[in-house]
Image (cartoon, rainbow, N blue to C red; front, side, top):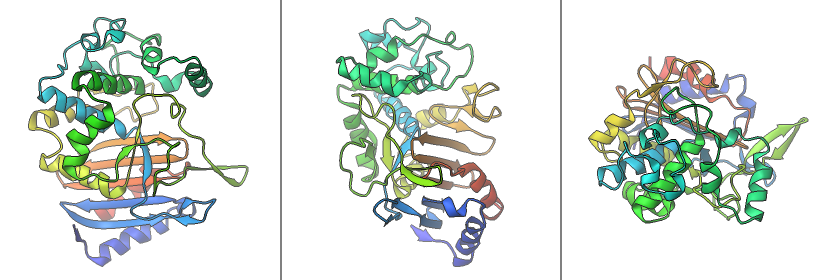
Amino acid sequence: MATAPEDLAGRIAALIDADPARANLSGAIRISRDGVVLFERAYGQASVQLGVANALSTRFAIASVTKAFIAAVVLRLADEGLLALDQHPGAYLAELARLDRRITLHHLLTHTAGVADVYGVPDLRLKMAKLKAEGGRLLDYLAALPPPHAPGQRWSYSSTGFLLLAYLAEAAGGQPFAQLLNERLLDPLGLADTGPDDPVLVNPGRASGHAMSAGAWRNASNDALAEIEGPRELYSTVGDLDRWCGAILSGEALSEAAAALSFSPHAHVGPGSDFDPTLAYGYGWFLGPDYRFVGGVTAGFRAAVWQHPAERLNVLMLWNNEPINSHRLWRSLTPVVLG
């Protein structure tokens, strides 16, 4: 990629340095337009405990940014005729036959299926430890969660729905989800620094998640589902996510039909959640008036991806420090970046 003029990068850097939370910034940012890097910089430490600085190549847990990748794999399989978006999940997995017969894969992709969000389960970490100790399966646990509302009744965020989609992709594709992801997306697009985030395994270059408590830095705990067997959230770098977003703009990542489905407003967020009620939702992406967004939050990590398609602009922020507010930071940069 080419590099933008130094004066623009300097103005962006100055705005970031003036941010009230500048002292807490720990992670990496990359902003590009049409293949030209406008700004990229790493901040803070990948490990406070070891005194290792973050770099642009540092790998971060991206949490629910994974949903955009799951949606893309499902759409690839649909393009291949292996999945039909208007089918009930039980058509592909017998364990999901118990779900409301009105639910379709489309409902799961748009957070309108009325399946409970597993992350809303009280004492989830304890319940996952018990499930693992008893030899239970995450798939069965998810399928048995009581539904909060009927399919299609309203939009309600549910990580459960996307975990079920990953299981459905495995059934239709005949491979573990990680292998499907590699073969359908990561390897063809050259995303060598993206993959399933297993915090138990050594992953060279992956940052540690940090949290502040009682005035002291702490290593954040792992995600509540990290130690139970099942589809995993991903890790990535700002460089890989920029390549991914560029491949979306160029048509390499999604077919024309899949892109149209992904970025059409199938549902509106509306009131009653922690998300901006003015946004719409496509397949794995939130949709604003002139941009799309996907973000992720997990213990010790924050991830945010904005794409302004008309501007061919990608904004990537990956953090390993909980208090950072990416939305506020991006709002402070938009007068300079978007003009």
